[in-house]
Image (cartoon, rainbow, N blue to C red; front, side, top):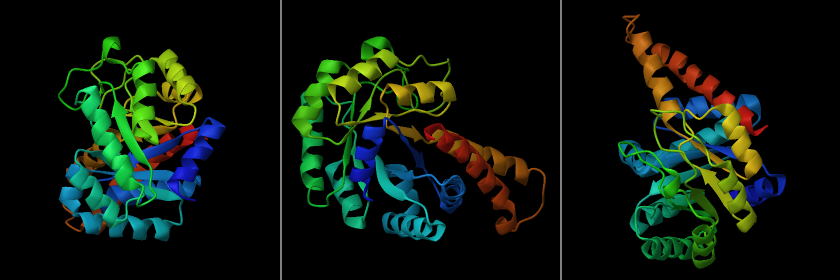
Length: 273
């Protein structure tokens, strides 16, 4: 099943899929182990910085080989692509899905950029994700209701771009939260009603209470992005292990941190059951 078909299935069933970022072989193994053990589908995400760190072709080869080895339904997605050049490189390398993030541009420029990527992606038959509204990135002020995605702009954006998936601003932010976020469930429902055939994406899900994620799914969210929590648990686990041992064999040191990523991922995957 390709991701376009999976998305359609999720919309029809009013369900969601977890989209998890990986940063190295270890976090990749933890995520795929969780998907395998819980018999769940999964979207594996790479950001521009992770691609730069791992190497584009190395990252794709590693992800594709690991997906096959673990025997899970998983797809590789570009997270927060910021240029047509990067998107094309990822499409040529074999990504199953791409995101172009023009959310910080004026509306018309965001439309133009996103529509260009949608047109490009037709040649590869892969879905495109866009973003509309203010979803705070690391270091930025977190959302206010005035910055939430409006129903009218969401509908207009999808009509003008033909984008397959849309990340909407409904109270979340990237990274960890200083205060407990209040999700705008009403707005999610309203946008879902206005866009019955579009995948709705919740970015900034790290640290969101699991009950709120389930509620967001019930109101129309189809893709749940989680990144910071996986990076955090891997590094905290590794620091703790290294502080308690003189063992320099990383093949013996890393597995505990990988397992902690796996266990966290299993709790996230369970939210879509």
